[in-house]
Length: 280
Length: 280
Image (cartoon, rainbow over all chains, first blue to last red; front, side, top):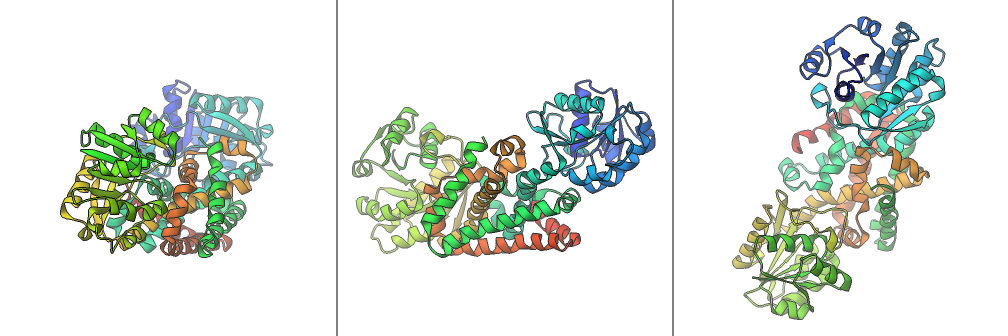
């Protein structure tokens, strides 16, 4: 089987590495605006060759769209214009409402499967790709009823080959859940980094004192704006809703401290501890 | 050498395990209000035997105070009443201003060394103790000039045996820095957990969708109030100062989104990305 990955970075690269390793595909075309990424992706064994979009699509059974969500949303209609009923297109974006809405009336809509693998790191580019990234993680398929059965089956096989646990949701529900579970974590991490950078002018002290707790909460603040600004833009309403709730929750801690109300502070912490029962 | 650990939990237990393993001590007395913890600590090889406070201190060269910071602050004067010039007392608390102030006029003040090992997990109790916890982490000694040279040397040797990188600070500076680097991370993590628990009533969905990013930012929210309420109370002014700054930083993200000002959003993220240059 022949594969095109559009975007040869962290997610596209990691998927291609695993699908090759498992012999799910035997030829991978890479499409990337960044010529240097194509060179690196070939050196790293992620792709067989760089290609134009048209040539790659014409020669592939499966096309994986793995660029920032605004780019995917813009490019998907063009890709669907180019495919036939034997080809499958999937994306890997962190927001889903916009991309499915953008092709809802496209005659080839049913060749597209909206997919979100719940894995990522703060790194980017082909060099950050890791073959074993996805095993045991959630892979979400959205609006499955709008995809042709054979296209859906293809994406399910991709997810299984990656070792992911499949979930099914509608695109709207997906965007609400990911605002809580993923997008808000990034905003709090960015804001925490900015707080520390604002308050702690001695960079050496940050470096020397940083405990494992600090490092793990701030890790996401290393994530690039090229990926995250489009996610926040496309999921604006849900993210704002959760962000408002988060500020409200922080104000409760502030109020408990200001009023020396340590019973209330303890209650807030005990409530947060309930996450123990939910996350391992 | 004989050691007393007061509090046989995560920190006290981990230190004792390592000091035994390295033959820095050959006998460890455990003092703990929780009888079950003494039984567990003996079974796990953390202590040789449980003891009363008086008996343990009378028979030890080194006394390590490893209970929540309010308890340490209250107990330290009593311990200093009981020690002589051949004995050393150290604490491991996350706040320092209160504990040193509480003994500033004590005749045995110079037998005490204020120490903060910058390591922890969200777990507690003897079973959570890990011998190799401290290697490569920062160990902060505060107000070193108020400790006798031999007591200081003893604690430096403990820190070296644990493999820690020693730093020296005054207690006031320590409490300001740890508010930025450690305490605020815990508040944001608690608030994030409460946000998700408030918004996402389907616990199954949290569990299934939780990405590695979410898990790492919410991990600290599992930390117990018994440890953290006293820390926030003792470092109230510094924590409130940083919390106010953090809410201000979050409001900038909110404002950028509300006004569709994505250039500003990108600027906020690029600023946060500077943490890349500071943390590995």
